[in-house]
Length: 152
Image 1 (cartoon, one colour):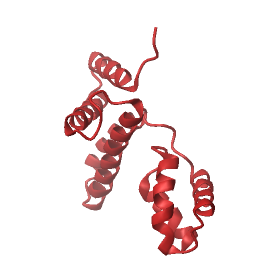
Image 2: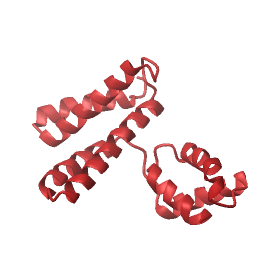
Image 3: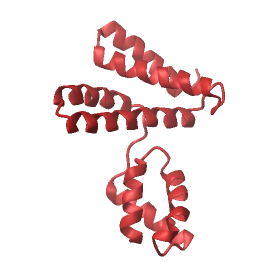
């Protein structure tokens, strides 16, 4: 039997969440499925998304949830932030293990050395390489912060 793809895992887990009547998982996985369908129809990806493309789409969905949580907390709605956080926990199961700050800093230092970057003006050399290197294992904002800290 062939190895289960990420999309198969999402579909199977959605069916299981429906059987268990797990509303949080069901809503989170439906939003992931919706994002996948949107990506397929957008034409930015191949019709049958690869696992790497799926990770990219799911990562975008997770980032939207993180941003929403921050916004709900800002406007004083901890109840809604908690719901989003619970759904984010479900979504993050389908993403690669996130790098620690120390691991991320180590990668960024290596990229800075490789690109010969010496100041903030060289940030545009470092960011694309760093983003490609960590692909889905760290948030772009975290990478940006570390690059600024090391070049600044």
